[in-house]
Image (tube, rainbow, N blue to C red; front, top):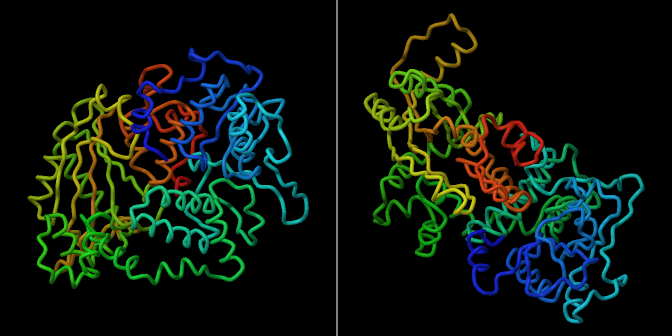
Length: 506
């Protein structure tokens, strides 16, 4: 998908397409034909171009789907896929007369003729009628933020395979392809039944031909040759190791790979000058590559709470990330800190970090100040996963004795454990401080999962004309920010049913 910023830039010149309902130089010539171009698989930039073309020829082309739409035009989608998309929208379910589902060929022919051409059989997207045993039609919403995704996965052989291909695409800096595989995997994970045949996937959204081919191979043969080849490739395995180093991203790892560094041993002997984060990541690689348990997260939570409250008695600390979603393990631990009084949280992170450092609990840390300003980082900026909170990314030195003591106190509160000679492990810990007024948005953003949050922002922009971030929700139609004192209110603002953290494991 083309970033919103680029789309705005592309539309800012003299050829900017008129918005739905706005005055156009060309009068509407065919008011009985109201067209909606489905962006799915078509892409944002091509949709903008085709919309502009249609309006210039007197067609009514809507930016958003509504009850007034008479013709839905899509590209490279099956009739079942488009129908599932329509059924996921309240406007689609309640309308008395369904819109025509048409292939892009009808639209291009109409543009060439300068008028709506006759709709022939070849223009109509065919929907399969399946009434036999095992051929039931399943309707699944296309956005991950519209459906529950628990931690339990009934289709792990399929989702694991698609995740490998997503990871491989990301290692090759192909973000769009990576997101497509992630969305497909998330959809299969949301199913509360086990897929046993490829026919059960017909018409489901997010599953393109490539994804269906991979899943069919696994269902019929037990393996996918493409996934097997990916997992055995030198690039994939080297990138997993190199990007597993704290402080190393895909771009840096790819550069090292091209220069012949394919392992930790080669990196250590290369003589490369690493920054502080990368040095710490390499030093504590073994510990940081091991899963963090819930008991370890709870033990760290007590340490952070003690430090924060000793400095600011009213401080509130919340465990976020995968642990808030109910996961038993994770790759790091995230805490959100706030103060009941607005602005009382300013400067808190530096003081907490100073206290933890004085106790010898930090092996590495880097802090940043809160740089969020509504006027410059609200409606004028595209929604993204980036936030501007006061935060600290750190590596904790966690005593294993403290973890054991926390386990015993949780299960046997009256039991006291004598501390033994200290043994410890390194754990990644992120501390984020949010103003109380933004806490609900921060909590939603830092709970995840990453894809769930991406889908929330995509839903906000594409379906509600809003911008969502971990700081705020801006309604472009009302030209104002929407306050929320809870996650439930944010979902209500977005017109979505509330999904609890335990069901956001997309």
